[in-house]
Amino acid sequence: MKEIIDEIISMALLKRSDDIHILPEGEEYHVFLRDGHQLILQNTFDFEKGSQLIRLLKYMANMDVGEKRMPQDGAMVYDLVDEKIELRLSSISNYLMHESLVIRVFHDKLTYEFESNHLNQEAYDIMNKYMKRKSGLIIFSGPVSSGKTTTIYQLLRNAYQSRASQIITIEEPIEIKEPTFLQTEVNEKADITYDRLLTASLRHHPDIILIGEIRSEETARMVIRASLTGHLVLATVHAKNTFGVIGRLKELGITNEQLVQTLLLVVAQRLLPKTSNSVSNLTEKIALFELLHSEELSNFILNHIYPNNFQSLNLLLKEAYTNGYITKNTMEEYRLETVSEY
Image 1 (cartoon, rainbow, N blue to C red):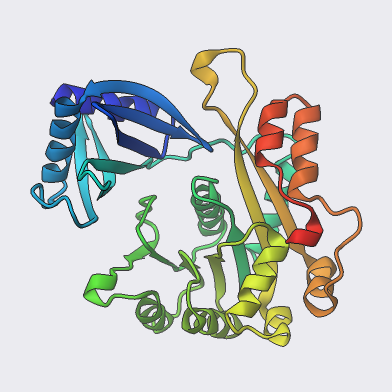
Image 2: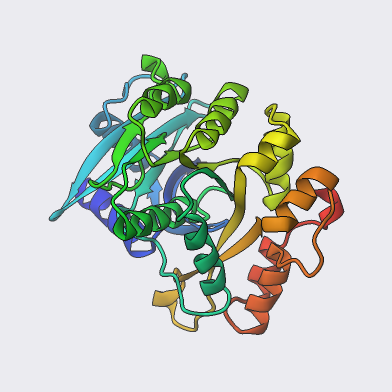
């Protein structure tokens, strides 16, 4: 069984897949790897073997092997040859008490390269420019596995290399290990919350703070306070695009005046599979960045005016397709609704 687990995790690493899905279907279990929006079938086992696989993985992750009714979460560091791979597991059963298991694989390396092309480099330069500010707020948005964490860590590393800085991160969980940063992890069960860690972090007078996600009004208020008191703050928010980020922050109680005073840059990111004729290269990615900043940002906050000639995600998708970076199917799959529906 160990050989099967080795093979599954090795394939996930090779394909740069963030998630492994072990799902029941009739008298079988299917193992899928997630590639963007798609689940790609890797293995099929009979029901008993699939059940054994799940039980072993739950045991290794210190989960209750005998408990099927309640959803469970677990974690482990898996030894794969000479590598140690951090895994987070989540189990849930269907009405027949047949368990499914999802394994999040944390890749401790950059999952894509910033390519020297006009789709990424100009946006990357703008992001690095704002990272030189002494205070303010930079917000990132994008779906799961869109490369946000990779982008943020690359920017933080660049900032650290350009000037000695104290960087504190508050995450749930920590996805990329970086010894030069002070990395802290949220643990709700132990009452180690975003708010509590942020309060403690401010006492350390960091230059840059990373907040894994703004979820509550209290966290939003503290983020604003931190960015007003001499800290550069990076955070993520769940929103469809850059304009949606503004709406989400307002829902969390942030006023227009506070946004204008603190918000430097909003980034909406997507990570797309690149066009390739080689099966081995199907997992190569290209990142697209929709940026809202400067006068365009303040005009939208105060007057709800959409900027002219804006480099929206939809426009960037079309440009990527025209230049042969992505397929037409990929363009259609990732296309957003019209601006009026944001």
